[in-house]
Structures are given as C-alpha cells and as structure tokens.
Image (cartoon, rainbow over the protein chains, first blue to last red):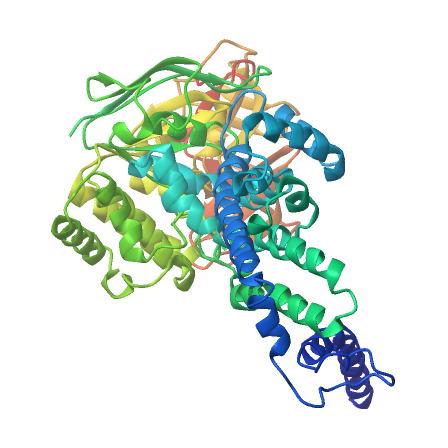
Length: 274
Length: 359
C-alpha cells in the first residue's frame, strides 16, 4: 500500500516537472510580451513584467498591420483543412472499402512516395504553379496541401475498421454509394476526420517555407512569414517578437483545446456484436 | 407475394475456389426455407448472391418471375438480417429502422407510423431513442429484425441471426421468429448451422455441403429419410450411429460389422446381395435396451453414461462398433458392464460406403 503511494507521488512529481518544462517557455512568452521595451533582455532576467503593457500588441496590429496576416493565415488554414478533409476522406474510404482495379498497387505507390522529402518537390511544384498562374495567390498556397498521402493513409486505416456488413445493410436499405458515404461512413469517420482537420490546420498555420516561396506580395503574407519579415528589422525588440509569437500560437492552442474531446471517441461502440 | 428461385447458381472466386456449386432451389411464395450446413459450406455466400451483394459466376436468380442477376441490391426488394446485426451505430433505434423507408421517399408521417408499428410488434417502443451501443444483444437483434420487416420486402434473408445470442435468448427469439413468419407469411431464406432452428423454423430444409445441395425437403422428412451419409450425420443431435460392415444372407438376412462383433438380423427388406459392403445407420432414439437373450439383442460394453435429466445417453461398444442410445431416464450399469440392446428394424438406414448415398 505504502509503496504504491510513493510511486504515485514520484510519478506525479515527474509529471509536474515535465509539465513545467513544457509550459514554462510558453508562459514566459506571454509574460515577456507584456513587458515594457528592453525588460525581457535585462540581467538578471525577469519572470513577470514590472509594469504590464499592451503597447506591443497595439504596435503589431496598428503600425505593423499584422491583422492582415492573421486573417490570411486563418483563411488559408481553414480552407486547406476543410478541403483536405473532404478529399482525404473520399480517397481513404475508397482505398479501404471500394473494390477497383489496381487499388493495392496504387496504394503501395502512394506509400512509397512518403519517402520523398517535401523540399525536393518544392521547386517542381513552384514551376507547376507558375504555369497555372497560381504564384502569389492564396490558392497557390492551398493547392499542394489538399490531398496528402499521410491523410489518405490515416483515413484508410480507420475506415478499414468499419464493418462491411454495415455498408451492405445500407445498400439493401436502398442507399446509393454517395448516400452510404454521407449518411453512414462520414459520421463513423468523424473522430479521425477531426484529428486530420486539426493536423492539417496546425501544419498549414505553422508552415513557413511554402508561403514564403509562393507569396511575394506582403498583403498576402501569412503570420509566420510576416513575423519573420518583422524580425529582420526588429530583431532586438524581444517584447514585440514575443507578442507576435503569442498571436501566432494562441489561436491554434485554443483550437486544439476546443477539439480535443472529439479525439478518437468510441463511436464504433455497439454497431456490431460484442 | 412473389417466390424465389435459383437456377444452376455457382460461385467461384479467382484462383478457382468454388464456394457454391450448381445450386438449384425454390422457395414458394410465403415459404420459409432454411439453409443448413457446416461453416464454410457456402450458405452465407448463397444468401449474399440472393441479396445481390455478390454476383454469381453462373446461373440465374429469380424473384417472382423477374430475373434479378443484373438488378442492384436496393432494387431487388429484399431485406437482410445480418449475423453481426450491422446496426448504424450513430443513429437511434428509430432512425435505424426508418433509414430504408426514408431512402424510398416515404413521408415523415408514414415513416413514423410504420416504424412505430414495427417497433410495437417487436417490443421496441421504449427503446426508439436509444443508440445501438446502449442496447443488449437481444434488443439489437430485435432492431435488426425491425429494420428488415418495416420495409415489407418481397424476400426476407436471415443470416444466422441468433448465433450471437446466449442459449436462453436464442430459444425465445426462435419461437418469436416462427410466430412472426406465421403472421407475415413472407418468403424467407434463413441460414443457420443450428439443429433446433433448422428443424423447427423451416417449411423446408435445404442441406448444403461444400456449396452443393445434398437434400431438400420438409425437415421431418429429411430427418426420417436422409439422402446420404452426410445429411444423416449432420441432421440430428446426438448424431446418427454408423456401423460399417456387410450383408450376409445365409440363415436369414443380417448385417454383420466388419470385425464380426455386431450382427443385426434384418427383415426381408435388406438391401443388396450376399457380401455387399454397407454402412448401417441408426438414430440414438431407435436403440433400445433389451433383456439378455432377446431375439436380435446385441451384447455391448458400457463406455459412458450421460444423464441429461429428461433422458440418458448411453455410449456402448462391441468390437470396433460404438453405439449411442437415447433412453428414458433410468439407473444404468457402470462403465465396463455388459448391456443388451436392440435396434428398431423399421428405422434402419443403409448407405453405400463408396458413394455415401442411401440404398
């Protein structure tokens, strides 16, 4: 009994230390963003602002027009997530449950493509988008992320667990393939689709390289690109950069916390025997 | 109410595995046909072919007068109850039952009326707002039945619907399904490997083995006159006793087992000439105890006595031959003792050991 309690105390202590290590920088980022100019780099370093101020946030959204970038990022990440979920759900379900010629071979080919690093594809992709006239457009940022091998794989693995009997029952009930997808498959895929949407949103939101390559007009910049641009001229202005980081991190953190309860909940329960 | 007819239906998979072999059978309008056979005999595949979920490699499927080979499952007017129930887990019981009706364009009032009628018939009215995950196995089974019968289809297909229920519930549902069929008189095909369901539910029994029909007929007829060794051994529990031996005619016809340890006198109707090899079959209930020295009595050694309550199963041996007798409850001698038994002469079955057919 006593030993169990000690191990539990140790475990919680370890968890607390790890949590502090993970949360500490985040919290200091928030704290530093509220410090008057110069205080963040003072020695010894301060934990809390001597006189909290929102001046840096006013600077970001006023003089430096970061609001525009925030809007761009939101728009891009949302559009990419929605479209990617639709396309990956369709493809993943087809690879899992529909019989068509060359299905296994095509899927193996897709998986093999996973070993090609994204950076290798950037130049050809850029040239392709240039041909299509999509360079320096938001559509050009969205297009490459729409269907991903990872997304298809994720959905397929989950869709494999849907019993065939369920789809057959719907067929006998009079549903066509589209109706089956919408009324039976999509609701059952919901946990994995939420996960996928979240992944895609985070990846698009945080993506720096691709928007930097495709976009040249600073009115179309996303947050990471705009922020990097700022750091060029404000590299010593730690408090301002911290405020920018808060603006970048806070929305995705909030999204994650809001959606985490949908993560892989047991919707399959009770569908078939057992 | 149309009937159902299969003409020369076969199913082979790429690679040559044949799971259904030239099956021809018919269910008259309103008839309940039971397909029975060991697992892997192709009975579920046959059901899926009727439903349109699998295409036959050869042969035709008719519902009524209509050939439905090229008709999609949804247009065949069949409903199926799956072994796994296959309820939509994200829908309430009401929506599960209503799904097919809505897809067929029924108005909300009509849907509600019919769902309630089906739910009332199956005792589901209190459960309409629940989801499958909140139901017991028996309740899920009822919902699966309700989903099928609410559509009033031309043909009902039931794929081992009771095999996931515990024994007591299975008994109750069996009686309920029989009553349901008597009331609706819908043409139905019921797949099972359960003896009791096969014997009690069907108007007609079709025994399958390795994808081929072995025998088809009213259950009691199949039981009384099995067409071959396989049917004789498969239908009935405990299984029929088989003794291999030959016919001897010198001094009156009789059956003698291969090692000579069992000799059964036969009346005039003994099949085959002197020395013909046969397999003799006798059901456990046609084996009776006899007093020592009774005419035709066999002296055997007791091996196991199973007292089941309403009956006793006696396993006895003579030479290489083992017999199981189903007897009224009574005290029986212990293992190793000698008992005398007789076989009812008018209930003996003879099979050709080569072709396995009834003689």
